[in-house]
Length: 226
Image (cartoon, rainbow, N blue to C red; front, top):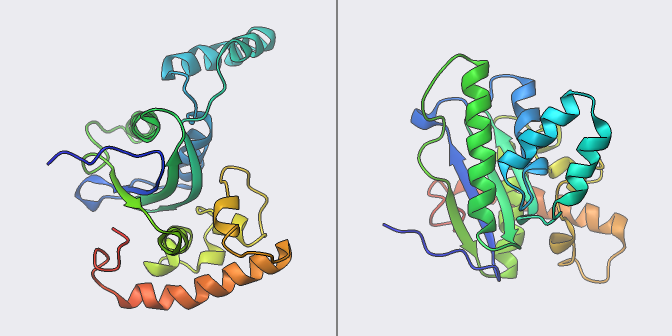
């Protein structure tokens, strides 16, 4: 069955897992590599452009590398709102800001990470279980709910407490880390007329209230999350 076209007016919960539910992150640097890919590949530039850039950079030709970057259009494909990487799957909350942005972004990130993983661990073949899933989010409350589901996914799955899991954007949302990968504004804006420090506390409270509710619902489709 064909997927419903992505609409730039809406946010999307994007997720996928390893083929046969296998682990896709085996070491710290695997997580780091995936997160770095989310940052560097979130651009309309092709993967071929980045190969040229990295070759020049590795050759210490910094002037040429800088010139190459300057010549290219610096336009993101998507707005990343939140993310979480777990041992055998990942979740993103995102909004498309360039045409076919989510599709192009996932093609670059998943394809690049598969090549990295296969080379690192001397394997071949598919790493992910088919094409990524993208669930449309059409209401403000669902945006807030999915932000909790994504940010706190390690805790929801019993892997680690959200505040102890470095491979999600939750630490950025609660002010422990100063990450710049995610646009937190869209979620924070739902706490109207509240000082920034109080917004952090309100979001933590919102997460703590919603996590047990989500964990209690075994069928996530009925809860509107997957």
